[in-house]
Amino acid sequence: MSTRTIGFVGLTILLFFGLAAALVWLITQLIRGNQASTLATLPLAPEGEVRIETTGNFVVLLEVPRTVRDHRDFEIAVTERATENRTILKLNYLGARSKISGVSTVKIPYGTIVARQPGLFQVQVSPVVEKKDYGQYRLVFSRPYLARMVFQIVGIVICGVGMLLSVLGACWLLGLLKA
Image (cartoon, rainbow, N blue to C red; front, side, top):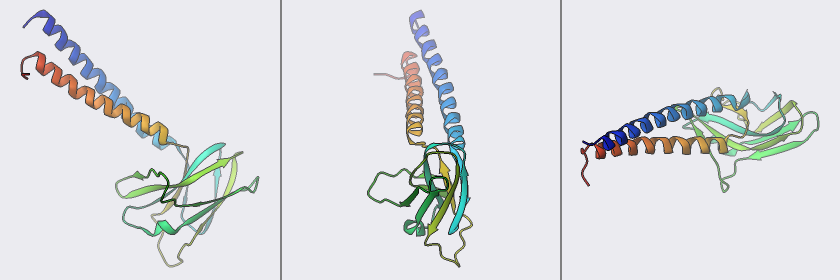
């Protein structure tokens, strides 16, 4: 084995560990970003209030157990107390949607609200059945997350593929793989 081959094997090993470090960093940033993007949560009830301490756009999501389907009929009305701006959100089946799946729950985005100033928001959900247990249902108010998540997931995929290719390249340089 030549000195040149050993140098290339060393480069592929360095590339592998560099990509592994980048992969770990991207995964932790994805998890931290998802936790930090949540502004407020509210148990599902016919009426409620939530305080949002930021301005701009935010996403209204409904977190439900993975197996239920009754969330499709809900209509969420959010009224900004200070300006009396009212936004009615319904689940849109034709538009692009990006649900967030967990182990036992799913967060389904209903739409985006624009907050012109921090303050109280009144939330009304209908139709809420009186005798049904909505203990596992929650309304989640979050910062926009889709673009950030797309870039992080693409980075994770690139790091994973790069790590695989660096292992294959090192094996090829060492003669373990033949053309």
